[in-house]
Length: 301
Image 1 (tube, one colour):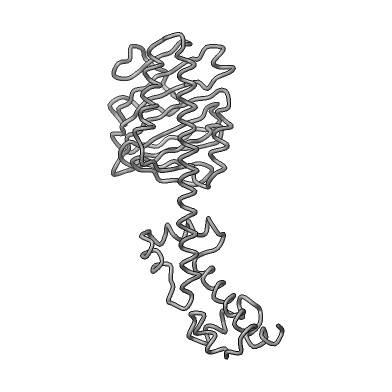
Image 2: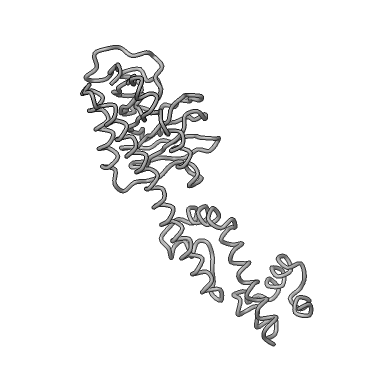
């Protein structure tokens, strides 16, 4: 493997003031240890390779901004809280949350004021690193995901540090494999997370479709499915492009149109069957969505 420098509790050499992840004066804002790795020519041209890896325990709130770094970054929160801002959007992170991003775009991170975080990270590049990050980023709007198996990630990060320090002939190849395993974990975890979340949203949509005659609200549905109404609102809109309220109104009016066309029930009865017993409100919603009254719609069709 290539040359390297080590800093921290076991370090033997001083490091430059500005590191890839940030600058934290010892004993002031954070306790940290890190390795800096310089890959060999073959690794730089053909493999994934570590640039820097380490751990940091914040002693108080701090923030840092970077952009245009030729690197990819994986961070896992071991304890505490903080946030990353990427592309103008801020994503809160807490214990066992992870983030993977391409550092060529601007980003910043901030530890929490009251519960500063402890994190593990690795900066890496080479091979298909940027392509892996792009594949990961395409899967969801948020670059952050939560893992229920933190040991899998911590084990890989630990192995990277051990391999770096070993100096053995095959270390570069093994480190490349560890990075590939780490990226595979990130992407497959995200795919599983998205699949599970989509399943939850489909169950919620099916519940709405089957209970149109009943009282429905964001708060009631969130309570039934054991989630916060704010989380439900965000995830439902992300999945279907409409709010929960808009979807409920749309489905009720769609059902009303079926009853108007294929039954001889009166409008007051139809309004009740659609879950809108207030006929004045039903008329208002119908006109808003269809541009005409229920009676006019029945005559047209």
